[in-house]
Length: 350
Image 1 (cartoon, helix red, strand yellow):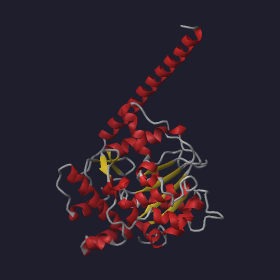
Image 2 (image 1 turned 180 degrees about the vertical axis):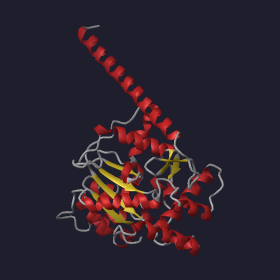
Image 3 (image 1 turned 135 degrees about the vertical axis):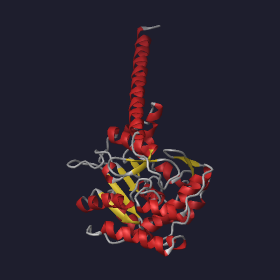
Image 4 (image 1 turned 90 degrees about the vertical axis):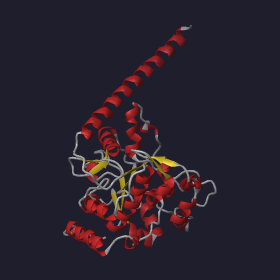
């Protein structure tokens, strides 16, 4: 063996040793946070699996909370990063699709026959940050530093739980796009989604009465709902250039206008020769179209605690569907909590 070959082998061995050491450190970090979450209070709430109560006052499954803790400890945001933030069932899939299609319209025109959405779902195009980092449980994680700008991520965690580098102040931080939805529609969509997951596990469905009681008490995945919204709303008011706040209902009324706002917010405004592009993006990402694509009808998407059928992410997506499922008493109770929580914040009732 030549000296040069020996040297190369030595470097390769050193790299392998360093990789093994890093993998072991990653695994230890994951185990530390898993043990920490396991020691937290665990209320019986609106979910398909066990929820834990974080010291900051929000609830999550073990996987989601561990992923959030790893992200807080390890993730370094870039000023060019864009983060989608939502509560579950608040328009997450739609805003992911709109953002991806808007940011990548140069290389993937929305009317192109080979657009990625024909083979990939929005959750594959914009992954959840916590899911990416939850791979620490294997000792191996993807090298997020190698991803090209702009990196697109999503999260369900409250504003208070975002990694410091995401909302650095003073500092560049990164862009955050938040979408909120009427709490009654959010609840109904979440209730249906969770019961689908429970059915897959052979579990009994949750009654709407029990689920509503837990929702109003704040015991829901990544809830309480109202505190989640009230985390991002003041951040938007204080730093509108960094935190964009959309309402699902307003997006439904004029989606093209919101796509234009989104493009300007992320620094990629529509220019000359792009007349009609915002409308084309809206058509591409329309609920009816997306729900009929093979990529969204078939297969599964890996989430933090289980794989979810892609079809589960599409139910109806309409405004006011809660009227088909909630009694007047339940609707009034949710409205009462909303008025109480939002009073004095300058945030009109949703």
